Image (cartoon, rainbow, N blue to C red):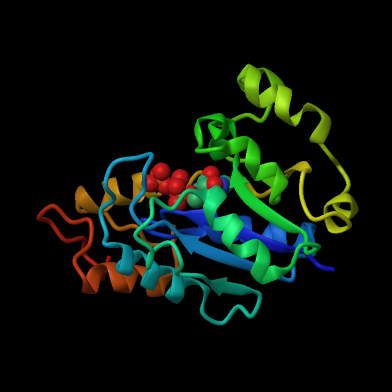
Length: 223
Ligand code: ATP
């Protein structure tokens, strides 16, 4: 059974780092689909700049036309805190007990995993595929002791192992290193600079139309 990839995030806004991660993971792991699940009210960071429904809409625009990419709005439409472990537990019965699920994480998110709510239960629900990200070297010594102890026996280099079991493995996946972050995009827009070519044009247009992330100055879209 081909795995389903799960890509959660604030997506404030979605950018090419997210899209490229999804594309490369889909190829490397032969994913049947990648579910993009924007967070509702994030519990682990400051209140984001765009409303949850606007972040959802930006993801919809960004993935339009890719038949393997699918938007899942369950966290945005829920009142619960949106813990990943609960989202995965909700997906399990829908996708079937034997279906491989791969939680797709950038290296920064993976290195912080041991701070997540009931993080050890994640391995009972999904595999974890970790993408390289500039500035976050994926070395054992970068991991805290608890994370290291948990993942030691779970590491795999073989995509087939993730395709043949429903959950429990951890795989590091190379990807084109794209030094793009939503924080930097928001900061550029707030400073009146263009974010173009860091994210899809349709999302840039949406940001302009809805005056997102601006603190006064608008960048000149003709430049
Ligand atoms: P922010 O700067 O607001 O924290 P972000 O750019 O890190 O946002 P998120 O929505 O928090 O984006 O990220 C969702 C997931 O995508 C996380 O697992 C994160 O590690 C991963 N990710 C985001 N940008 C990249 C990138 N450039 N390369 C690899 N992974 C990325």
